[in-house]
Length: 488
Image (tube, rainbow, N blue to C red):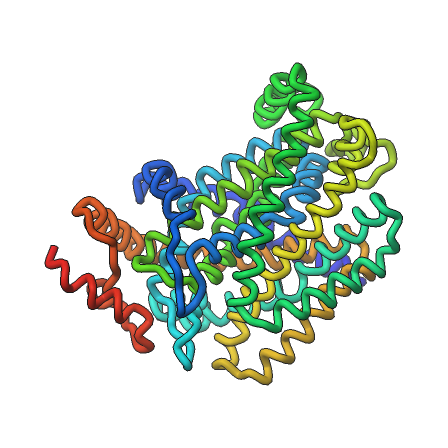
């Protein structure tokens, strides 16, 4: 049995129906238990995201938002949507929307907990945290925390980066004829310069690139909508009807639609996966629930906006294939083009006159990929620090491994890379979702505390001692002192 077969077999076990049900079920349970904070606090969510908070220690909430948007908005939003449509049909897009709306609660819980249990690094100018930390400190399950940390090093650190390099090399080759190996080498070299600067440099780069790349991609999608506006109602109807098997052509693959929609939704927006929570912990904010709400907004931007833009481009252009249960093509609009980012690129070329749109997509894609890889690096490095007790030498060893894994995307077929990416994502989701369900009560207490202070008209501040959380490193010291002065 070769390596590809082994990886595929393991991935099929991890992404069996129980994990799909767990992802959807956790979103439903947490949404109901917390009274749907992703909808109740939507206005506050948007306001907090663009607030002008600054930070001398750690990164700002907006930098954390931009970094997590950057890591979420990547190949999963373009090639991932195409893959979901190929294996699950147009209805998979509907289930991506559902996992996002429900998964907003999962994102809120994991981000809030990551903030509540964060620690200040020795030296006092950076914070670290995430599922490994709140599992160990909140659940007292060191073994589970270690498993999550290992899964994060394997996933974002080793198995997931190559996919992005492979995709961007393909799209640049298609747009400009540039050899894939050249694109991959340049990307790897520039990324190395950024990640070696640590989380502060990553945050500064992300807050510039993330908004630009999102706006450019949305504009391309809007042009497609304008040019094919009469077909838009039919495409929306196709997505919804297909999701429930009401569209005859896709009625035999409803199970695949749900599975691929959830799988690609989690891979794209990372809600419940725990990776976004790692970046959240690096920010400085006065109350954990504030960063939790900011991260819900990043999940919504990722899927409801960017993934939907990809779906619009692919489905309105008619440039896609769907594989039936028997392996035969149900829809054959893309000819011999392999599924992936080329669906979107060729779809743009088919709808918008000239080839400039495909070139713009290539440029936007490099920003998508670059910010994704920056986020992946920080998520993995944070857990290397957790596992090695902050060993600088081992962090540098990991940096070398990460750079090699990025470059490896030039050498491995994309099918194998998608499987490896799903494997890393699935491992993290299993450990993290179980943890946030067990700590949901603690998160609810923190949310109520936030709402109480907000209603009183004061800046919500957090005192971990009130929730039985030990703050050995003084991560919350100044905000705890401020809260004690409120007397409410």
